[in-house]
Length: 297
Image 1 (cartoon, rainbow, N blue to C red):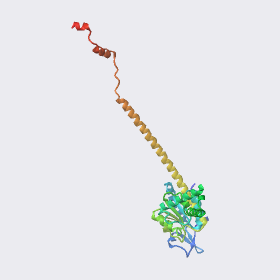
Image 2: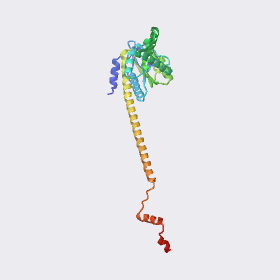
Image 3: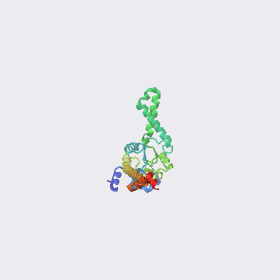
């Protein structure tokens, strides 16, 4: 059952998402999203937060239903656990460590590094790594740990994502720059000190609070789950359509073959049925004249 706007507002307010940064530490570009000032803190307009959140959920649902994934990026300490936990549960790619340059713009190289990770994991699982020297083993294990730390969240991302979600656009500028270069739509939780123009769909809100970050991530993941249901339904419908087309083609081919056999039978000459009179005539024609007949003539 879909949540009402009142339920969403209550949940967001309880999480303290409306508390922005100090008045002295703000970005003037966030003015349209600021409700006022209380005790020296900017108070974010919760109506703008709800508007951005609903717009982001609709876009994510459509993106996932269309067969594309959404990558979640949260490398700041407050966002790491929530991003990794909920993105993993939804089978979506995630990045919680340092964003490696070229993760999207040099995706082929990143895929090669992930292949290397698989090779190292196979070395460990098979026990073959024990045949190496201690020095080489330590070196390989360090390499494995480094690749896992940086790329484990995107190991199943075999193509570029359809959208990107970031927690704190000020921190994730490198990721946003690559997404923008590839024209990948971006969504971001933007605090009062952030720049809403860095993302396509800003969600104004506190990006330092663990609770507010988790509430937003969980809500966005619900949109992912709804999109996955739509994707599975579309795939099932496509499979059913393909099966029906295959059955129709088979029936059409069978009808064609049946028609060909009927036409072939129609062209075969009918067997000649000989009657008694025709047989007698033919025999009479073939019999030689008797001597009496010759004498008479």
